[in-house]
Structure formats: C-alpha cells, structure tokens
Image: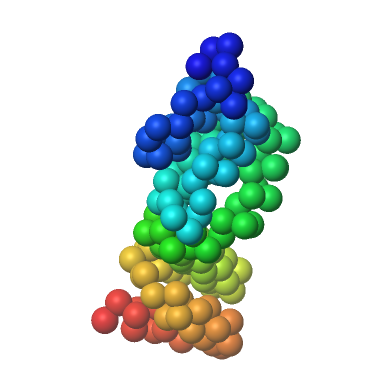
Length: 164
C-alpha cells in the first residue's frame, strides 16, 4: 500500500476493508472514509462496526484528535449499527456494574461517616458491617435511620439488626 493513492487500492474482499486502519498509512481520515463508503451500513453492518472500532483505536493511538473528532461525528450516523451490537450491550453492562460498585462504595462511606460523627464508638462496627453489604437500598435505609436515631444504643441495634 505504500505509495498508493486511495483510488488505486484493490477492493477485492469486503471482509478485509475493516483492516485498512491497521495498515501502514491506513489510519487516515481519507482511507477510513473510503472504507465506510465501500461498506454500506445496510449491507455490511458488522464489517463497518469492526472498521469503525479499528479506526478509533488507531486514531487514539496516533494521537490524531481531529480525526477522532471526525470519527465521533461519523459515529452519530452509525449509532444504530453499534447499538445492535452485542459488544455495545457488554460495554453498557460493564458501565452499569462500575456505577453500582461506585454507588455502593459511596453509600458505605456515607453510613460510616454518619456513625463516626454521631456515635464514634460504633464507627468500627459500622465499617465492618457495611463492608459486607451489597444492597444499595438497604444501605440508604440504614443511613436515614442512623441520621434520626437518638442514642448509641439505638444506632447499635440498627447496625446489628442488619447482620442478623
């Protein structure tokens, strides 16, 4: 491909088009645009998705921010193709799991801070108990309850009741 213009590229096998961004000199906006033109989304949606993915990886790796922005605009037109991909669903699921883990960590910290502020002697117990909890709604209820209890004994009971 070195020394070739995009018009001189031999286009024999559709399955190879998505690999163009990975070739020497292939990670350019011009080559990627030709690739997309040769891979109409309606007919070759899987190949277009693969080509899009490889182009985005190469543009980022080569620090071609303007080309990456251009590709992002192209993404808006390909959005339906990408949404139908199992990879898209996997990425969303991973994001949801990360978000859930962050929410749990924040709520655990909130509960411990409430106890630390109101009943410092129970802070270690609260930390130990909430570390084992994976139910965000239950952690929220505990935070609300601990915010309103009037004594250390009531707080202790609220915390211990969760373990039983």
